[in-house]
Length: 305
Ligand code: ADP
Ligand code: MG
Image 1 (cartoon, protein in one colour):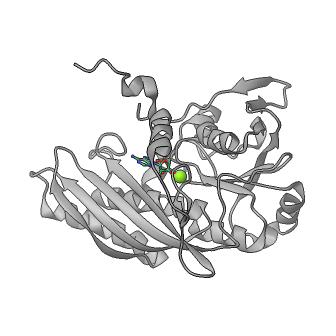
Image 2: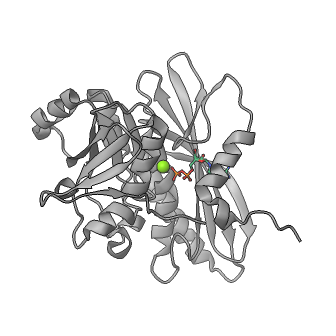
């Protein structure tokens, strides 16, 4: 038997780093593994964006806790959220499903109503997919989007002294079912990139500590988070807001000057934006509270292994 490293020892992100190392790209690929969506040459003015997200029964949702409509909605929502984080506009999707034999037709019909409900809002066209038998329900949505060359936002781009900002509120996503019902922040991301200079952006899927850490690693920078500035969702604890994940909000950085412009134009902006921290030197995350506590924090979001 192979006595090599186990996946648990390598870890989810270690495995993805390995894929990145062995995969060869060409000039038409501007960004491959490591972004929320891959960025590929397209027209004179635009790039194409590719992203895929898989939902697996009992890992990403529980049949007893989610309606089929919500499962479908979330499946497309996760991919839309990745396009949002690049500043993109979604276009076409392929939907692949693995279904246990005992599943009723009605259940699948409702999953598709959920997918269609969200697709209609953002004018996404479902252009194909794949259907298979599986032990557990699996849905994968592959989504293509586009973004103007001058407006694409990467995880890379955060500058020293940048303000760290988030949309909406964080924490308690599982219990409140936000993770099944969220509206991906496509419109908000488009508004931000059209009106302000956003230096770096990611969507909050793994959790604030984990997703901020992705930005820091990419930029070889550190961050201070101001505890009291984190916008908590109803009934959310601070720990949940920091680590639990699946908020599907946007986390972004911008200069102090641009943040000042946002503050000045708050009345014109019809969604919440909170300034929660600052980019600093060093590759560590620090938590600062008004009480005077100052401590290092580690990324602790969800890992598959
Ligand atoms: P997100 O949470 O934004 O969907 P992930 O953490 O799933 O992102 O993935 C991180 C990066 O790794 C992405 O750029 C994704 O395309 C890439 N990636 C994940 N799994 C694989 C895989 N099996 N093969 C190649 N690239 C992968
Ligand atoms: Mg993402």
